[in-house]
Structure formats: structure tokens, C-alpha cells
Length: 253
Image (cartoon, rainbow, N blue to C red; front, side, top):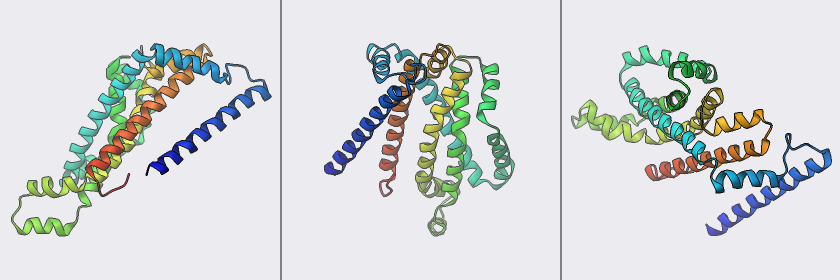
């Protein structure tokens, strides 16, 4: 296990070194200006100012707050509504087509309308993220609840278990694997939704930083913000996979 991790680390570092050499070689060979491809030293200075000195912490906190709050709301609503739709057929006939129609509209097109209604502050970011995270968890909840073994359900019915008891003891636990898979997708979409909303209109946030410094052609700071977003997204994904493994230990994710 340790040897495999060392091999993975070594391979990753080798890839990063090769990319860095290719980066600097491209700047030297094609004489690219800094606003097209800045040298790694400039990006390093921007990373130092942003993440060591701390000039980007306030914006990162704003993005994380909008992402985490919207993700939590979207996931909870999706699990509750998905469970109801899976259990109540008339509700499925009434709600499912409406959800499909709503999700067919691009969130990028809806986000400006959300900003108009909720303003440029945190609420519009939360709403955009929740809307984007809802669908994958909703669908996976329905699939998971409906995919439980019929034999196990029949066994519970044979012992006189109520519909609620069957749902709480059999269907919901059996759907955890599918729900967690949907949440892993939702985590990625959460950052996308928050940054898109910050691009449209926002007083703070890493998306706001990228948009602002793009106007000034300061690509180094843009890369510093983008790298920060990548690290935050990778950490959130790793935490979600760890939670998946803890809740469903017989599965490898």
C-alpha cells in the first residue's frame, strides 16, 4: 500500500515537472507575452500573495460558503423529493416531467435571472448551486430507492412491517450507495454553479477575482485563483469519496 502511494506520488511529481518544463519552453520558443502565458515565477508570486499572505482568503471563504450552503440545500431537497417520487406513483407522474423540463434549461441561462431576483450577494450563489446540485442527487435517489431487492421487501412485508418501516429499514439504507454517487457529481457541479454566478455579478468570490483580473489581463492572479478553486474542489471530492467509503464499506469509490 505504501509502495503504491509512493509510486503514485512519484508519477504525479514527474508529470508536474514535465508540464513545468513544457510551459517554460513554450514561453521561450514562441516568445509569448505574460498576458498570454505568464512565467511560472509570476504565478508563484501570485500564489504566495494569495494563499500565503492571504489576499484571496476572503474571496475563497465567500465561494466556499455559497458552494457548501447551496450543496447542502440541493442535496437535502433532492433526497426528500426523490424519496417521495420513488414511493408515491401519482407524485412521480406529476413531478418528474416538471423536474426534467426544468433541468433541460441551461443553468448558465437561468443564473442571470436568479441574480435579478436575489441580488448580487450570497443568496443568488446559494440558489444557483442548489439548482445545479439538485438533479443528479434526485435521480440517483429514485434509482437507489427503486433498486432495492424485492425479495428483502417481501420478507419485511411477510412479518407485517409497515410501509414506513420498510422504507426506513430497507429502501433508504439500500439507496445510500446510489445517493452518494449522485452527491459526488453534485460536489463538482456546486463549484461550477457558484463560480458561474460570481462571473455574472458578485462583490466577492474567486470567480469575481478571475473576472476582474481578466479585464486587467493579469493572468498570474487568475491562475492563482483557478488553482485555488482546483485544490478546493479536489479536497471536497476526496472528502465525499471518503464519506462514501465509510457509509458503503463494501464498495470501492
